[in-house]
Image: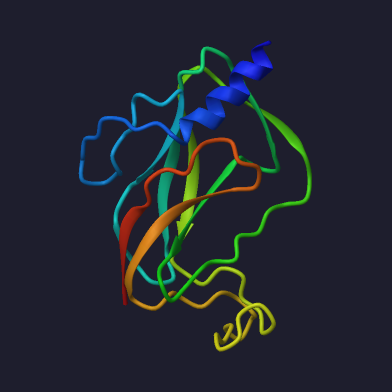
Length: 164
């Protein structure tokens, strides 16, 4: 019976709306959803080729611990815009994770370089000499949540400015 409740809660969470506030660095919070997430970044302006530290904060008001599976973690946050969509890679293993009731936090690193650099996967983007990922073009991006297995409804993206 508990499993059915969690499935219903996860399904309904995407349909709910909540109250919002703005602290300048993170998107609006959605307090009324039984399961929600938000992206918090240490900065919203970063140099191309660098990294932004942050976290995904999950609020579990389902009344139960949520079981999830992943590999190396449940979440990744990557930058995208109308001209660039990252190729997000996941390790190939299966681990069980528990999302506790209440608020929990999962650290993430957001790269300001091209993700998935190869001649086949990124036509028109030159990898550096060591086949590494070149810096993103300066401009406006959104930090978006990526999940290998959907655990939470997608949170509001966070606006990020990448500079030269």
